[in-house]
Length: 199
Length: 165
Image (tube, rainbow over all chains, first blue to last red; front, side, top):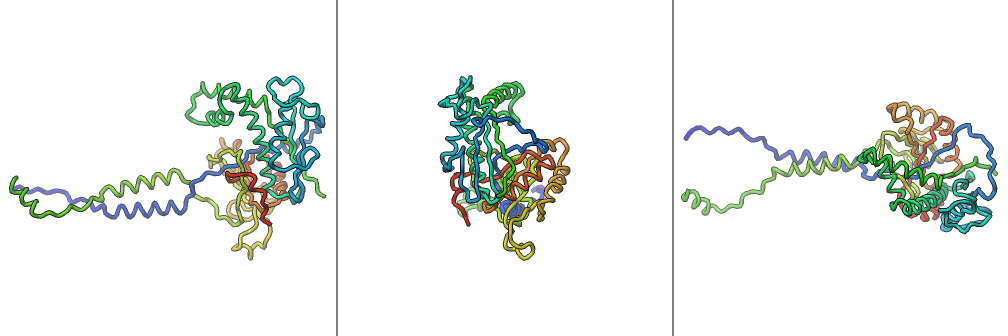
């Protein structure tokens, strides 16, 4: 028999152990979920303009030290806030052909003019503030979705998501951008947060 | 040939299951976890149970985020800091007046093209009062960091009402 010299195979038995150790290390140190949250823009630093806002175009939400919510002069529960904000924005008394509100002369004239203001006090608790922010944003999102579905047959959120995806090509992006602008123009988010009043 | 076969049939031992592919499987698992997870960068020194919200946006681009934690100091740090609401940035407690400085410092550590899209993620505990949040917002306005994100968990917002006093 001729000499058949085969090279000695490297023992890979411990490889699995090493890989397992690494795996366990990553499992322990890592967290899977990405953070989520409510995006907001703060006003500019020297934005001291005093604008003339008609009373009817301003929806005032106040949160007091004991977390009661007052909206346009009446104490309400958080659950009914979204509906109230939507009625206010979508009232559309004058030349707003896409609005579906009741069109009274007590709520906003046009979504473009509607301003929501959120006032807090120093002892208001943070979760309730987040809830109110969430409901106001929710009201805007719901209205935007409605119009987006009517005009472009897709929810507004989906358009935004697709716009920020890297896979989307330039042409599509341009189209999406135009559509997003159209919807934002219809229901611009105007949320005011005046300085806290101490008392 | 025949002889060989007959030899095998006498010695009927089951061959050992090959474990040669085990490392490959584990490595695939390892790479999967390495890609989908993010590593915690900060040691929490404050209580941090976030409130819940539904209308959220994802904060998936970690490179442009400045994190600010707000909450009561945890038990292990009570002796050092005393009780009360504290602000944590970059693994240390900061006073409210210093927030702007630290935020700018974090901003200038970012690559230049990301600076104008930098987002401040406010991670405040459910027990926090609005006073300190308003102060924080004022400080951030002073250093012109206007894009903020109230970081939350996803969940039913109306659970937030049950106050833990």
